[in-house]
Amino acid sequence: MIPLDELLVFSGLLFSIGIFGVLTRRNFIMLLISVEIIMNSAILNFVTFSAYSPSSSVAQAVSGQGIAVVLIGLAATEVALGLAIVLALNRIIGSVDVAKAMELRL
Amino acid sequence: MNVDGVLFALLAGAGLLTAIAALLAREIVHTIMWIAILFVSLGLVYFLLEAPFLGVLQLAVYAGAVTILLLFAIMVVKKRIFSKEAVTGIGVSSVALAVALATLFTLNASSVTPPNGGRVYDTTLLSVSLFASYGAWVLALGFVVLSALVGAVYLARESRGRRIRAEGE
Image (cartoon, rainbow over all chains, first blue to last red; front, side, top):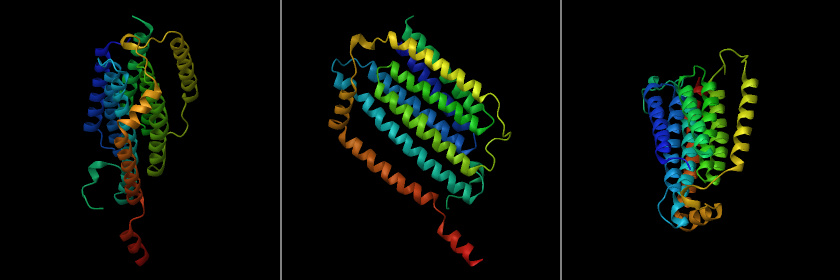
């Protein structure tokens, strides 16, 4: 059995790495990847607390996994939209550097 | 320390190292390779946490679909994928990865004990819970994915004003 605190520390470290990436990178694709790392740490937390749920009923304990399924779907949707934005940015300003995208209108 | 703890320590170490390497890699394609390894190790952690369906979903959606989508985006955006076209060491490292994963699986297959006192999670239970108590969420997820598809098509298409301008020139 994996200790709970190790799982939480792992998830927190992943979250911090993702935040570091979001704050320091300027490439839009790197921003997307960092957001994916953050989403993954959140999903890992849901699965962890589902496995360590004190509830004796399995149906209640498994609900964390249900939320994780919905979150994985949402994350995949977010990547698809983000990549469409990457294509639009590349067409309009000719690069994927977010520092060069200074206008909100397309 | 039991087998699960050791396996988790290995997977977590690999995950953290690959996440850092992904952010520090100079080539963006290398970033995607590292991030694929991170997704695979997270999927194996889900297997250790008695969530096999989520592990499979993580492997299929993240390590499969998201990685390939990112690669396609880079292929469209960049003129040259690598700055050096010939990359050495990918074959050797993939063989090493395959051997490492095989040993992990054979180690893990013998001695998996469910956490939390022998309560066994069943994929059937997860699906029943998903469609009985979270049915509205799943339906809402479907609509979100549908609207995101429409939005992605709208964003990625050739813009109308630009096309008219190009025809006028």
